[in-house]
Amino acid sequence: MAKKQKEIIDNKPLETKLFEAADKLRKNMDAAEYKHVVLGLIFLKYISDSFEELYKKLKKAGDDTEDKDYYIAENVFFVPQKARWNFLVTQAKQQTIKADVVTAMEELEKENSQLKGILPKDYSKPNLDEKSLGGLIDLIASIEIGTEIAKSQDILGKVYEYFLGEFALAEGKKGGQFYTPECVVKLLVEILQPYKGRIFDPCCGSGGMFVMSEKFVEAHQGKVNDIAIYGQESNQTTWKLCRMNLAIRGINGEHVLWNNEGSFMNDLHKDLKADFIIANPPFNDSDWNGDQLRTDARWKFGAPPTGNANFAWVQHFIYHLSTRGKAGFVLANGSLTAESGTEGEIRKQLIENNLVECIVAMPDKLFYNTGIPACLWFLNRNKQTTDILFVDARQHGSMKNRTQKEFTDSDIHKIGKLVSDWQLQNGNYEDVKSFCKVASTEEVKYCNYILSPGRYVGTEETEEDETVYNQRMKDLTTQIFEQMKQAENLDKELQTSLKSLNFDL
Image (cartoon, rainbow, N blue to C red; front, side, top):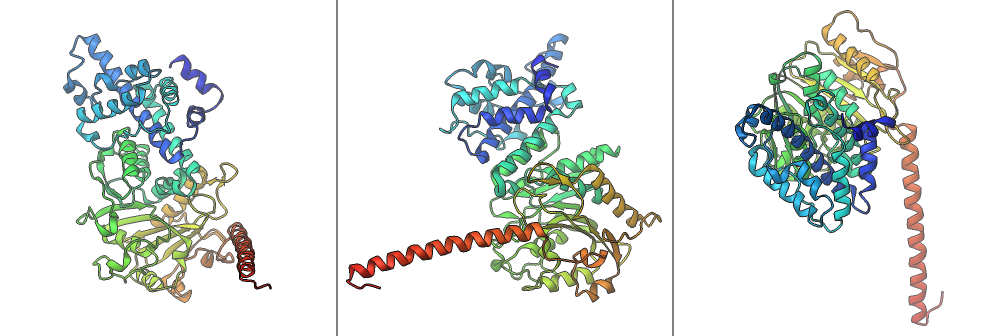
């Protein structure tokens, strides 16, 4: 390991130190733009490291170092001379560095068809100055992320995942559009256990569900080639992040597609029947063109309300499940209780048709983009019982920082094992008051098909916890205060106007 890399690791984890240094170079650039600048360079450094390592081996063996076939045979991207990291380092202090990086990305795409159209090329923006870009290149040059040793330590995975999370945090609400917290993804995958088959995410963001699925297979001594991933994303820049995220891990992303119409209006995988669906769709989306899809064939259990896409997503997932398929996804807590429009009836039909297998209530503060309490739904088209498992995990998790909470590995293992024990009927599962309860369909029917875990596990069910209530009250009082100020200003304007007409109040 290089001396500089050792220095970076000394005091803090590499990914933390690297992000802090990169963030200092951001200056006035918006985080939403800057993440593409940084992650694009990290991607370029990774494949350049891999290329250079094989290049040296070929040179030592006396082989042709510029023969692409050698690199293709070893599943290594071929990097043309002007895209090699060593070349960019020599150009880092030059006024042409912005154009040099754009050229590097273009040359790389020309030589590697699987990268075509996914690399960022917006390095010429006025708000990114040459000195900051050069400093970023020098910073990234100090770490090895694509060598065999670095790959064995998953240095790139740690850096890329950490950067995605930090940028999501910096962007606030917008950050949730491309990133689901790693602990939530881990829990979804731990419960679904996607060992083998087709995995689908129709709102795939930056691809975290796919990456975690592959990690799960590897951790359980499975064969990564036994799973195939399919995805769709409506935001092109987010789709590019996803494809890069997959490429750096050697995951085939050819079936992860983009169009700006989205999965509802233009389903790019119409004929796909997936074995596993893992997703985090937008919460309570009101702008989903529901009025144009009232008679869509996907709405087997009822047309979703035009003002909320929650149950449109649920039925889209079911439509794409194979006869033995399973789905795990994130929804707002309102999906468990909502009666407006057709939501209550659709939820009833899902229960009556024995599709709902498990519901997990989650603590607040897990997500970057919303304070809305969220839950996990698990559906199964091949359930072995008509019962439903309810898990109330609202008291689990620990504070990651001042504003963010996360599930610990212990939490994830505990919940995952609980669900697995119940599914296997191995005698190890038992109801735990205030935490978990297996309820019959009759019990759920008695509760008017409400699926809030608190109704069943023995805790008092509330619509929202104290933290969310306090935040809402704060928002409301702020809004009222602003409206009062506006009213006061309007009164003054009215009095001025009346005085100009010789009327006094």
